Image 1 (tube, rainbow, N blue to C red):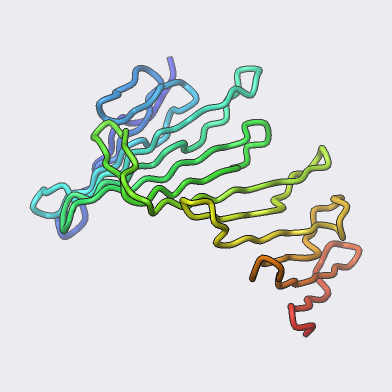
Image 2: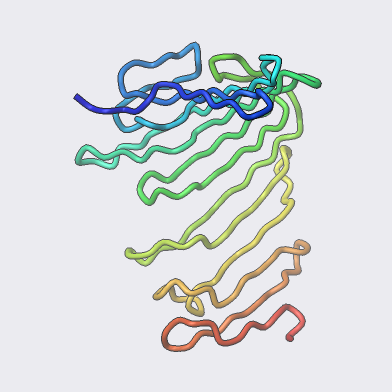
Length: 212
């Protein structure tokens, strides 16, 4: 027997607005509600939140699809794979965000902000616009520690909108201390900020892109 907490929790504020949260129980999947592939590893994860106004009118629904990656020895990495937000009042519309994780290190490697979509009550959706943006994350590791080294954001056509990089320990990852950041300005220009530390890893100096 396992204790999984409450299946749903309702909270009401002093104005009468209400929020109902639904949680994985590790038993069966309520797919029509957006509960995806329920398992013991997802117990306690909130997969659906409904917000109502004081007149009991549904205002917003957020549905989270939790993905999982097998880590071996009865372990799993649980991460948000897709999040659908449905606005039901004041001009209805749906938006969605998707995530991809490296299950070996537990790091997010890709995020897709799809913007406006056509969503469904079970959490599924179809992208209908051209407003999507993606963000890619790259990492470096020395086998012991992992650090984020590059972040690139692109529009739906693949054009780079922003990019930033981090250099650790003067180029050879040892302690994981950021010694330089690089922020993309143009295709050929970056703004660099440099950092130094003492032997204990405490910051000593910061030099901005203008040399100050």
